[in-house]
Length: 121
Image (cartoon, rainbow, N blue to C red; front, side, top):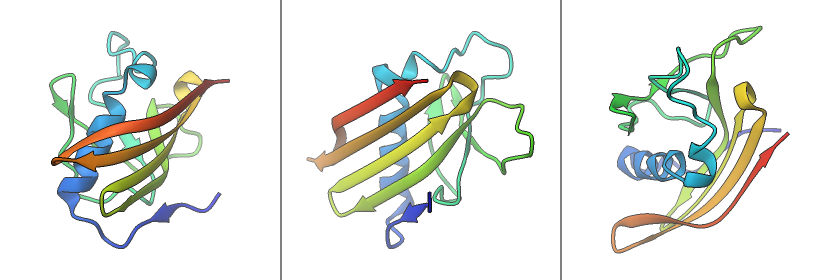
């Protein structure tokens, strides 16, 4: 699957979208912050811009490059598309066997999830 990235949206908007997705209760249950090595959250994917400002469990998330074989718990962003007030996100979390997709909308400077699908394989 080819990663998709919108025309350079502001990093603030992308940060807010990523924060909203990571805070989604349907996905958050798979993060398991109590497991050693899960904090800070690691994210990867060519669609993830540098300079994200996202905090989860009191720590900034960290963008990493995937290794082969990947032994860390890394959330992989396959799609991160922000166009105006709409966003689409598709992520994989191999450590938990989870894939998820989200559609978001910005209203009054706040992003909210309008639809989501989280699948545990």
